[in-house]
Image (tube, rainbow, N blue to C red; front, top):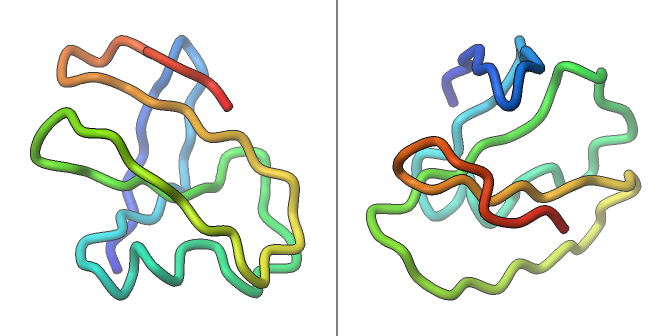
Length: 77
């Protein structure tokens, strides 16, 4: 997995891991006990679509931020 930095709404996330394939997307943040405030995971999908996410073996409270192709935040869960 590769790591990138990304600014979202003026907040710099310096340690985002890019989930590049199905296995990485499925594992996600599974079994992580701690993440820093500037750390997270980004999933890139090729089109707008409805998605479902499963959070097995996740020990952290997380925010899910949906961003469209223009970089506009469309939803926060």
